[in-house]
Amino acid sequence: MKTYLFSYRHQGAECVFEIRADSADDARKRVARLQYATLDGELMAKIPASSGVTALLSPLLNFLISIIPSKGK
Image 1 (cartoon, helix red, strand yellow):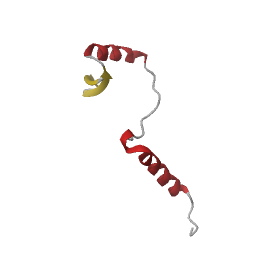
Image 2: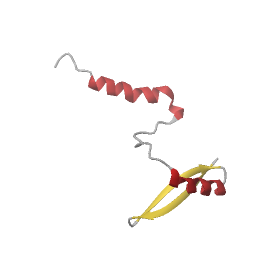
Image 3: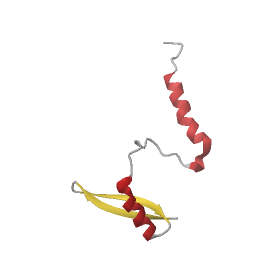
Image 4: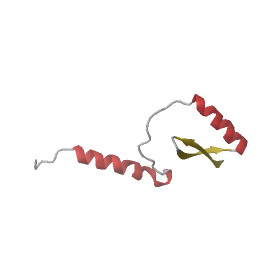
């Protein structure tokens, strides 16, 4: 697959997004389907797959440590 870039204007600003597709024609067809897309939520973080489980668990562990009350308090 290749990455194709698309741009459009919205409220005076130029916006750009990318679509992964097999060809330029496939990319255009995928963009045409965006009118049927649904909002699934907000992206909070991207974790590279090459980083493995450690990259995924490290933020979780840090969060859990931060919410556990310390004995000194």
